[in-house]
Amino acid sequence: MSNDFQIFLELFPGESRIGGISYAGRKSGDRGVRIAGRRMTMAVKDTLTRFKEKEREKRKDLILDAAEKVFSTRPYDKVSMREIADEAGIATSSIYTYFPNQENLFLETTLREIHVLIKAMTRISNENIGDREKIGKIIDSFLDYIARNESYFRMMTLFMTQGNLTDESRERLFTVMRRVFDILDGIFVRLSYPGNVRTLSHFFFATLNGILVTYRKLPGRGEKEVIAYMKELGCVLKELIAAAGAGKTGVRP
Image 1: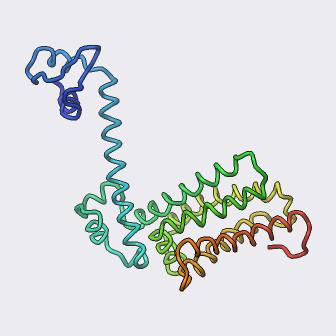
Image 2: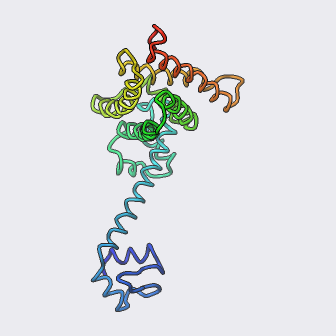
Image 3: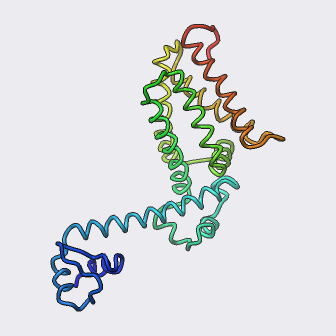
């Protein structure tokens, strides 16, 4: 019997069925199983491949989750791979199966969260609503997401103030960030903003991060109250941009 088919039977006991023939409960030496092993279809191989890939992604996410927690405590180059492995509950050597070095692990941790934001921004950008409303929804989505991901927020705050990447890693990060700015550029162009839209996109992103850094831990306020106030500040930003696009003010954000 082929090794792959044996693995399939072990992964799906009592449910193995190929070509309409059920092998539930049969032993590996049974003639039917031997025949099935020789005539195993591509469907079984595909199932095994998908299963292995799913398990690999789960392990990778486990490492990324642990890395995010550890990287949120201090700059990534001050962290050890052993600390991350301990947080994930795996051997240090296992990390290198997925990530060649610590900088790559930090970069992948960062990019994973940025891709989530890009997906949300793209969905909002494609909605059948006005561009002014899109700005407001992007602001709210951004603030809500970061507020729910405290470790990521702390990690990026440390990186923005103390981080240092190689030119190759920095370019990978910038390439992904340009996708964020491209989405914003498109909205600001449609709003007829009279200035440089890429500069405005940079300003928009920096302002939202500034709101988070300044007010995320506002003393004496509860979580909901803090988020509501940050969104109120974000609304001011939205109105400034909309007004500039409509030519209602001589002050460009």
